[in-house]
Length: 223
Image (cartoon, rainbow, N blue to C red):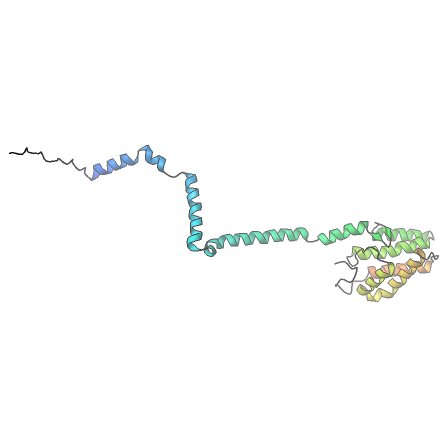
């Protein structure tokens, strides 16, 4: 039996180098490859993903070190800003309290300069009781304005004199005398005199021209 002859399988012609390059360029230029390229948002997402991968591969300490620096700087800037806002606030609050505080049992918001002017006017008119009371109030209000004395509710004239004596020991005697004159005309209803007013005015002037001998706060003193 004779088997039929089978024609050998013919292989296609292999393209040369130039033809192969041309065919590859034609293939890559097709639209399907363009659509497969990552977009700009894809690149951002990839970068974020690589960053979080680096946290796992390199360790939290090394990967977060730049972020920690930025956070520390931002924290310091925030603290400085808060400090600038808070700085001076106690003094502002102190002034607000002084403006509405009871001054030896009376709601008196006059500043020290105004109290002195009113005292002088009363003295010129011979109203010694009012002159003594206002001049001693001027002494107390001046201490508040200098942040030496805090307007503690219920503070008496002699209590204020004892606090002032700690800050102004050389003027302690005249301030205590002024406090006694204030109590005499204000509470004991004793008549005031020109000599009594002179004592209170001297105490006010002496304290106004002196510097506090201590900076540490005493009981009732401003913080």
